[in-house]
Length: 254
Figure (spheres, rainbow, N blue to C red):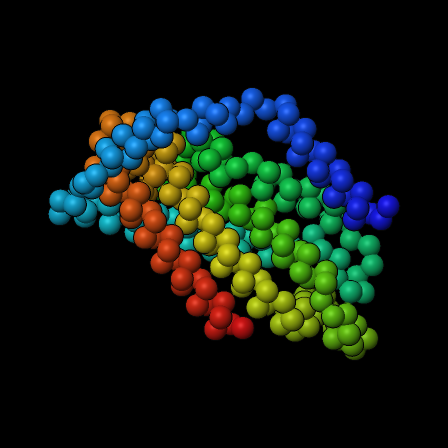
């Protein structure tokens, strides 16, 4: 059997074992009582609260969420690029001493979810958007740093080697031969992570990190479902707008 066949067979066994080991109560989930309960719960969201004062609060929360995601992604892109350079093995560099420990650091940063980072940073940064912004930046640094490092390792070695034979230093080789090749790819990665961070920023408020998530946690905790529906609608609209903007930017770059 080929390697792909072995992999697919192992994946099928894992999926089957997951269904067998988990207590998935499908009959109860698709029962009439469950459908009625869900119908009553969804009905409580209508009508949403569209009073001017509350809509202004939600609009400010949306702007705060947007700012958190944009600033967090920007900080992560800068930090990820700085870490990706020593964490990658560029053509002609030979062995890189810092590659293994820096990749371990990037793995550690992205292994901890944004929600956990926010809960930890609340201790030092306090309640509000600063903790959420830093949580997004720390987690996304690990993600973008790894993606950037892999992209740098896959560049065409020709231009880099040509500059090295002329005695050009490593920094200028990266600037003039490496980055121009991968810059569209790095921008695409950054925009994609910005889309993800919009969703994450909307959730981070659950632990008090500001934005729409904080409004959602507050009003849902008080069972004010009309206000909760308005906040959820603002989240959906914000995500759709950022997705459309990111898609347009990627098309323009292409």
